[in-house]
Length: 265
Image (cartoon, rainbow, N blue to C red; front, top):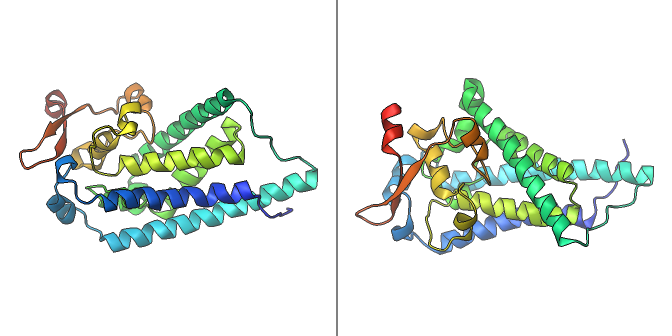
């Protein structure tokens, strides 16, 4: 197999989303506790999460290092193959419509892949116990814990899912920089544990921090598998858990399953 140095766009597509992850989650950290917007109290976060924040940071860095290695290896191999075959680099579309269409296709592909892989990791007892349960040690999610996963889960859900989204949509590496940065921000936001007024992600998507918070609770681990964009597959396949968002007396909000669903379960 021929190998070649990845292009600048390939490198940016690898490292920019990681920078976006820490910058965006860092903004949430700098905002402070924001008690009036929290989905769980600070006391719950400290009591119910069984892993320290130091360990979470280390775990995310390990996963990101693993993903960087895999991505660079793939880009190096693909670049070398294209160079040896005399294939010219892909041209960036001049039409915004084409780029938006590629974004939509990539979103659908990523949602589909992650829904079925995520659900399988819950259904398969071995994979849940030894792989996916690491992510669920954060019963009360927070922003920089969004990618606190087992490296194998990161490879299957994020790296493979991202590669499929990239290939099927036909986007260029330059477009991919923006798409994967956007997907990263959405994932961080889904785990931020806050219900902020005017949050654009909440305005655009029903799959949001409250929706995903339901999944992280013990009663919701068999529901709300969809991530990171839409809730379509949950609704089609009967794994959608409706909820209400109610204010707590001590401040903040609580996402609660609807009464009808509580009776069923």
